[in-house]
Image (cartoon, rainbow, N blue to C red; front, side, top):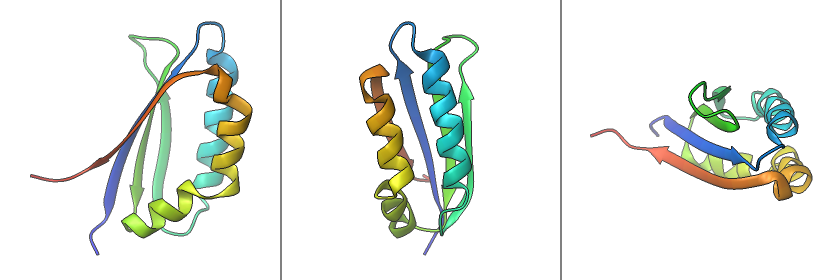
Amino acid sequence: MAELNVVATISAKEGTAESVGAALKKLAEASRGDTGCISYEVYESAATPGTFVTVERWESQDHLDAHMKAPHVADAFATQGDALENVAIHPLKSF
């Protein structure tokens, strides 16, 4: 199977960027230990503070699917769900 590249954009509600950023940092650290994770980085937009981007590489779609069901992903959404304005996950394909 081919590697899977994923970009996610996460927008924090006004006044919540600090807590969302901390939660995403914790999520990235835990996700790097997931089976099939090649890399997992999180950034905050310099142009639009409070907008975060994850850049991920997975061994396969199955590994990404397992990651999405992992307790640390559920915990991040449970603790920060009310602080999130928008979450968009983009698996990428080459063309």
